[in-house]
Length: 436
Ligand SMILES: *Cc1c(COP(=O)(O)O)cnc(C)c1O
Image 1 (cartoon, helix red, strand yellow):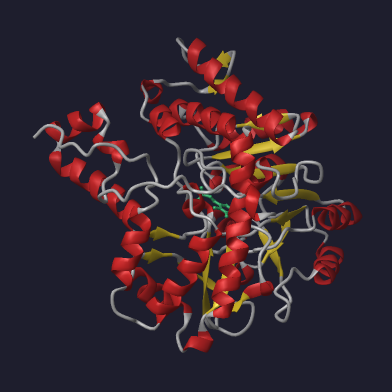
Image 2 (spheres, helix red, strand yellow):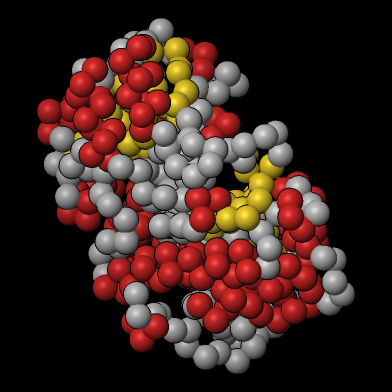
């Protein structure tokens, strides 16, 4: 995209490392008076988030509007069931909140049905399996070593315990999904479902190719779009809805909503999906979170969010180029999304050492498996820093701070703090001491 269409940060005077969103909030002031011990933890965590560079690929900064919905009295309401068919009285208004969320989700993603009740991305995947599979069924998913999620067959997770997972892989040379192997394994194992999705794959999956393989062997296609769904909302990534039988997603990653999950599907699976969420795998819905999802979907439907989603990708590409210039090996040679994977071995450190040196400098990210060998790489994402208003010049700066941190140079922590302070995640405000 052209530089002129970038979302450029509004220049802001550096502010003290204080989270305006908490200091401004009368409810927080009351919490501070009542329980300073708990309030101090909340405040310190807000300061931690604002005081460094948050590059964990799955994280973002929700808007004050989303936080307001999360902190609302809808948290008090019990609402088992679905709008118009609840097991509790007094649900008229939370019904309206849930209808608003589902209507906005179906419009945003162009699907016939949305279930916005899953408490998390993992709960959404659990419900998708519950709707389509029986214990013992064979499922084909990206191997965990290649970036499959825990719910894609980890022995430590219900998925690995209750289903027979077969893992497809990625080409060690290119880092791309090996579609030939996917097809061979599908023909050999005749899975009941194929799962497409990853915690670290930086490229767009070829949903049409997945659909073709699934059709050939008569399998359901489940797209676990937990990561890219926010890019889909902003038109910056292909939409899995036309290809997959069920799309599982989170609402808190690039999508920038509250922590939670959702399921998208066609009309013919709507009842099965709804029953798989409630009553099969969950009880009462979290109505404050569902209201916050509605708010986030409303935000995601705006031109500003479209610009944001494209900027997230432009920033990830810029950061990937910067890291490559600093000598890191960027997995797949770049990115189509918010995710960048890299092997820092050429700088004499493995992923774990890199993560701890970066953390010491206030740059927070994860390690990840590498498609070759036993070593670990690093995985990062640009969703949160882009929400803060950072653009391509800042990505170039982050890449050089990154290299300086890996070399353990002096004063990197201060430079990171200065940079973060110039892009506060929440609007700066007068810093008041409430309740003192
Ligand atoms: C994040 C993620 C999940 C799970 O989300 P939680 O809300 O942490 O349960 C599931 N699948 C994939 C591919 C993910 O990236």
